[in-house]
Length: 135
Length: 111
Image (cartoon, rainbow over all chains, first blue to last red; front, side, top):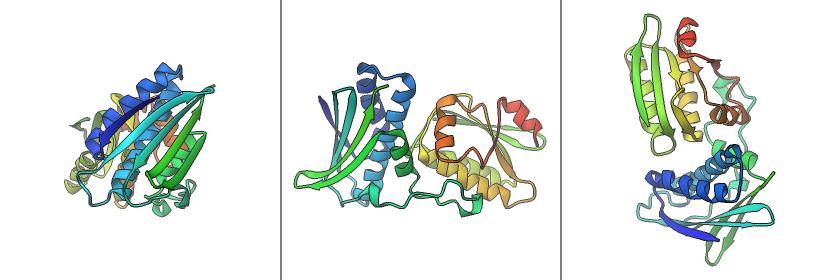
């Protein structure tokens, strides 16, 4: 299990993607899966920065990667406003250009790219769990 | 992320390389907006050097497509979309909103 604290700022998204990417590669995921995992982690982080920590500039969040039973489990722990991605309405991806909603896309991708997306509010912070199975 | 602009007779090409995410998407968006402010509503986005694009980049593309299409025959074409990025655009249902071309110059010729 590896864990790192990152400043909750968009400039750190590169490092967050590198962190989860290195973990996913070390677990033997294909490059295609590594990209999906990096994209899902980026969307999760971007949502926390944008919504949970809205208006807060010096916050941080923790990323934990754990691999067991052929599953990579990424946990994102923040201490901001509760923001449950599973409660966000999914965008209509068949809508015409003029009716396309701008919001909800990151969450939609997260759910499509990962096998499981869970959200819990705990005394130690808000926990978003992303699970990718190998193969 | 780096962006360069090439002007053609009927359109401008916006070549974007590196990574477009929540940190860099605003600059990508501003570059496309600047073309429209100059009266150019036919844009080819050359993605041949693009390594990564998150939904922040997708939103920038969607906004540009909406703005360009408001004008007579204005449109955003996508060219040389790398496989991983195309797969994510497909997941988001974006490939139906953009004409895509294998080659940037082919896209320029499409206008």
